[in-house]
Image (cartoon, rainbow, N blue to C red):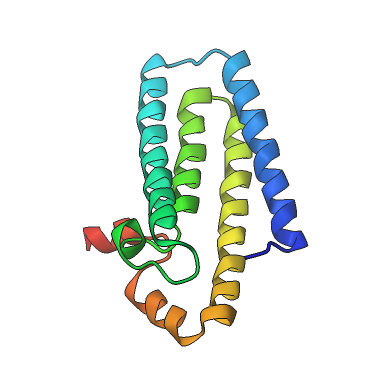
Length: 146
């Protein structure tokens, strides 16, 4: 699916926040070393979501709805993986600039997801509506805990 101007701007903002986080994480030394380890564990979880979603897309293609594997648990696992990876930067960087940048990045991801949802509804109509009822957008952890 082609991205619109709004999504492209959000992607540029994501790129800027990523570069900013990487620079700050490498310039400013962490205060609590144990939090850095936790940050890398969280980062690994995000990478796992991202890789699982990417492998599902490669195997099954993007023409139809994928409702198995990671896509049977959460509708946007690739974006969720990205959000988790950004969240890990808070523990790795331990700096208020990284916190603000991460919050901006997560908001951008969420706004991109909203646009993707609208496009999917327009393109796939009832099929996507059924998928939405079956699989949560991002809050799968809350559903598992209940």
